Length: 88
Image (cartoon, rainbow, N blue to C red; front, side):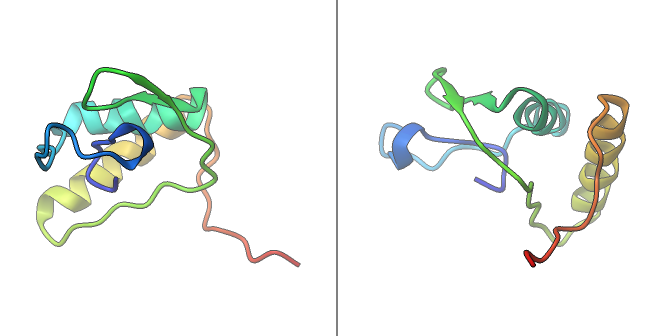
């Protein structure tokens, strides 16, 4: 999910909508997805993810701060951040 939470196999977690991850945890999850191909689901289960892109959604100042901090963390972790490329 774009909010940083994830349910295994697309299931609802106890029928509830997951809370958004706190800012720092969302940054850590983004780096973990990019570097290790996994993250921790709201159930506590480790989920394998094959992602070529990360997508952020939001319309507040918090969204811009998250995007900035995630980009910095990705670059510090050695991940090259670029715009998606159109397949030829």
